[in-house]
Length: 121
Image (cartoon, rainbow, N blue to C red; front, side, top):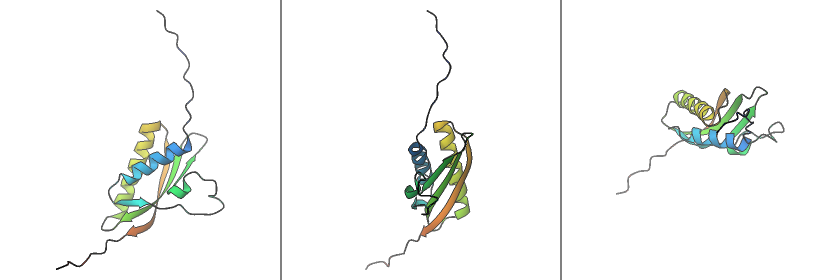
């Protein structure tokens, strides 16, 4: 039995897949409360994932840039959480789709503050 080698084919990743990967990776990080809607405007009118809190761009070299808009929980270190999000998102993109990551830009749009309720008694 002989095997013939075929040249590798082409894989196309839908933008929605990248948005989902970024969303799930960001939400997995401790200190993230939820995604915030991305900024609105004419330039972002056709950006994929803007209303979901994630804006994805892929350049001609196939490198991914992700802008992630988030609401964090209170009582956390914003800088540390932001770095953790960047690492998790970049790792998820590289591992799951094999694309290089140019940048993961974190935008903290709000903080969810927990209001301590007085004890009932």
